[in-house]
Length: 316
Length: 275
Image (cartoon, rainbow over all chains, first blue to last red; front, side, top):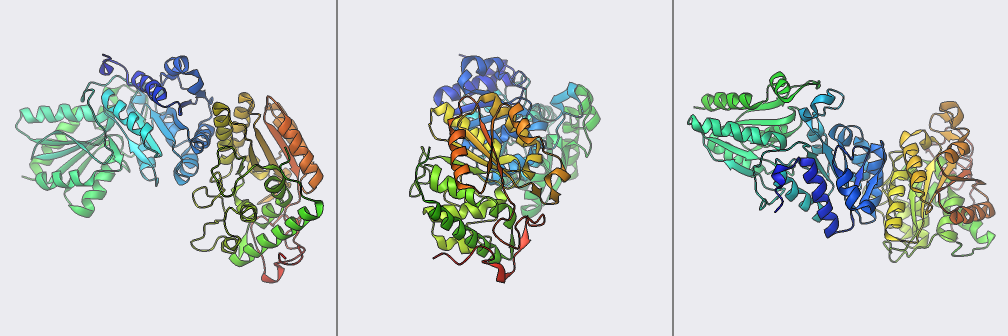
């Protein structure tokens, strides 16, 4: 049996796309000259060349072509780097996809600091915020290979404009092949009463590590993972905040507009408690490796653990 | 190519009624995109009443020809054609741009039966038309995808992305028409940002290019037929038109893109209400 957790996430993306095409030939792979970065060259281009459409370096046109294909019943997965998949063609996605409610799947590869060596021009910290603010759009950010597959199967089966954050790297397993995805439900990865920790996508594994470290120190972390940032499972958050009284959020994004903001919106209206948002402060990216960028922006594993300790103390 | 044959007199009468109906609708709503609506009357009448295969009682009939109005602000002229074809009651036309209408100023594929693609933010419709033409190629469909773009719209970079894409993919089931009235919101196209030599540009992008008088029934019919016969590449028809044609408040006036039309001008130059 294939062990997807041993693969880079982009390989998982491309091979899962092949499976989706084999189940439904209307599934199409659209690229904008980053097919090698998405591993769809050679995975999809070699196996299903008739379903592989490389638009060249024209993201706006790729979104429009995707919308036209969707209008005709196709299910296009349009992938490029997250910066180009969101902020570069925001209006095309808004009008041709979301406003028209066309069944286009937009895939943003290498979100946030995982864009490392390409630096500030390519580092997008706003895609969750941008996409979350768009009516009709669902926004997913899976945390490992098995969840990515579950999310992709869901996307292909549901007629729904969707943005998918795709971490390109290999990710340590959090789930197994029985992973199920429900966009209406958060996933509780640890139970505790001292502090609620909310994470999504790339950051969930680090949040899990922090929760384990804190558990060893006797600090119970209630860890909620949100594979869907929109729709957002408000009830699980409210229930957890009622038990703990303190919430920490962490995301591979700007702290403005993304997961942390979603948490604050829900709690502000339904159960106000103190919230600490971890992520990139209001600034642009730069070239750097993961350790450097975590340290620079203050949302690495040690920052998560420290924020949880402080928040747990503050409500005692 | 020609599905129906109407006499010149019948076509003239349809055009006269269309001009009255859209002017009336724009009067009712106070203002509207009269210029780019009136320049398209003969082209839209020809497409819907002479050329396109449609089933008004079955708007999503898979084998229908598609029209994408990429210059979505000319929605009212397509709404008029759809109503006259029977996609929805003609009474709807009096609601154009009214509160709660199903006929907004810009095209909306969700609200309006027979509208294929939502458009209004310029440059996007041609990309969608490329996607629809590509889908037909993938599925072996024999229908055609028509797409009307504006000359001002041709300032958009996305138009030229789509031009590259369609040329590369040899989408010969795609027939684009540029409403070349030589005017855009702020002035004449050659003064705002030069388009010429426009035919050469499209040719260089791999398209077969035609030019026609966009108000001449015979020219429209023969040019659409010639464009349909092109194999191995997409076709672009540069339709030389007069912005605002048929209303003395707008004809040939550079400021007629989106104007207020006074009540007394409902039938200016376009004769009487529909008989």
